[in-house]
Image (cartoon, rainbow, N blue to C red):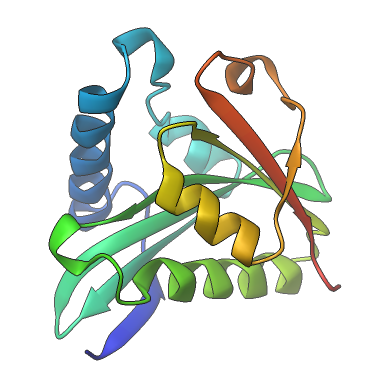
Length: 153
């Protein structure tokens, strides 16, 4: 396995394809009103960061970061294609995103994930993310779990 993590535009074909795959998967686990689709225009306007993980020239996963204010950003759309899970892609993207966020001056990362995303929850907790109360209206749902990490800036 030869993982490469690189930044791509959120509106690129590879980014939109991976986000679409994730949202289809989420629709299998949650009612439609629990899923907040990614607003590409808002993501671009806030100068979000979007990473894609590539293995031997094949895109296998993605992760977005949307600035909320000058110090805090939100992780969005962590996804690894099912055939590639358990091989370190999610951890590699998380590490790169934290590094990029710290480089850009962000001090905190928050995120909301679904309470059925046990592997994701384990990943975040194993990498220093602590459970927090909902941080906005979109993260305050019955199936939501929120986390925060302070970056070593």
